Image (cartoon, rainbow, N blue to C red; front, top):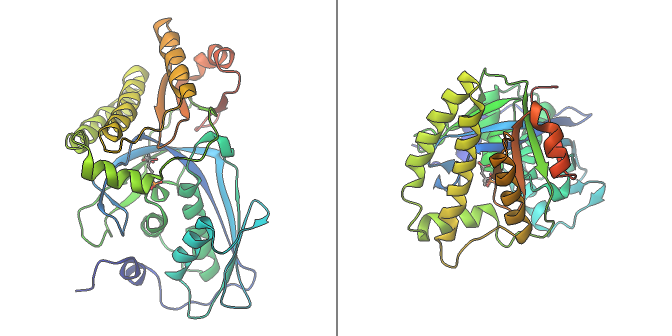
Length: 333
Ligand code: PMV
């Protein structure tokens, strides 16, 4: 049996015949916000999670990427119009991902643009690797299924497997060692009144990336043990709330899940704490508004910025309370 490696995943899914389009490949993918978080891996190399997770796509925020063949063997990575130094961590990570797919000696020119505001704290790696996977599929004419594309995008960044579809997306953790059953798919539920508010609070470099933070939390935090079971229970509750359009339960479970994720991090040593004073102030303001009857809940990823969940009826109150709020309608207005 083949070793469960990234290369084996690619060999299992990608057709051997590779005739690239001369005009290059293109991919576009939305950012996604986890409502029930992916936090903790069962396999570090393949980005296999311990539990299922559930997210919502945040179009029009996301990434567009074009992929062209370079004349030589080296890659050129252009981000927001700037050629990145090949030694930068961004370019190195892109090159390592492309290594999985490139014929010997083939370099690429990758031009990528994020429509995620840099201060918004929405991991652009998720939409980035989803867009790059789509661009590869287009360049080589693989015509892979969404499921297979999701598996491949996961190799770039775990949460990227959830960035191929619109609306609510469910990532099945899977149980196979080779990860071929660990993929995301869209849910049928739509919720046109639902709004997501992005609150750009702090624009500082993260003290620690999510990959390292997950590893440290899992291995060091005594608070991690109950986390996988909590996620399973939270997912069941959130899924039922979605089906019933029960916003209070939906918001409560999402907020609670995010806060519990951050609680597991505090239990690591040295502690991992992404919050800044602005985060705490915004959370208190949110809780105050909720006490006053506004239907609003919050969630945070591995960073200091808060995202709000609310029905469209709360828009005016929230615009006033948070003038810098960027409001998205994931299912259209
Ligand atoms: O895919 P990564 O390695 O960037 O991890 C994402 C982790 C969280 O954003 C904190 C949670 C999630 O489910 O997206």
